[in-house]
Image (cartoon, rainbow, N blue to C red; front, side, top):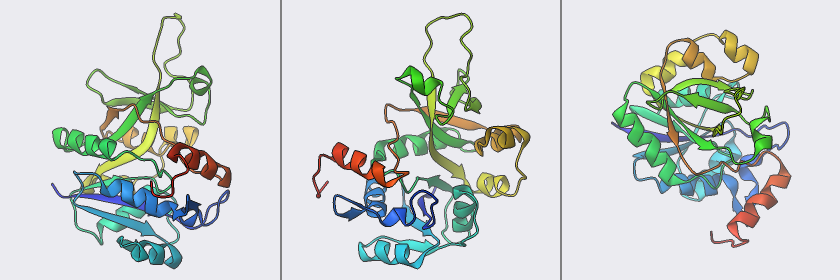
Length: 243
């Protein structure tokens, strides 16, 4: 199974235009993400999929591989689907371009799960540590069956704890691995009912009968959505430009 890591990097962002090029301790964010992803032992190829020549240029300057994709893609899945037509592979891992602290071990775990369930989409979850996150609609929750396959994703608190028993809630992490044929079928499907209600693209997969394997991890995504988040990541990195 040839596995390709794809990092979508869109230039336009309502809250943070040019985000992939923002410097984190002197290094472009897209470079930090790329270097972390390259540490994965399960990926045969890593590419940045972008819609902007400046991003492509920066990636190539630090020795990475970047390909140009259309500017009108609505989602990262759509962009990766275009990549499947340009970069040969059997399985594609979508790594968010705004997570400079992504753990390569998690990427490896997703690919290993894919080898055990080759027809499934694979994603990740992590235990929620703070009650306010359980009730926060911006923190997407996931429930799985006993075999680790997703039952549902929601912005609501699921399951609702009517009995008051002790329960661990799980946050869904936006890291996906797709078999090529599943990905290309997925992006051709119209938005589903639950997807439109929750505004969660992955529900389209469940509503159309696709399986989603969910890997548990201790990693909790630290994404960069605004310029203020840069400082947060720099503090985690310890202010060391070489990290």
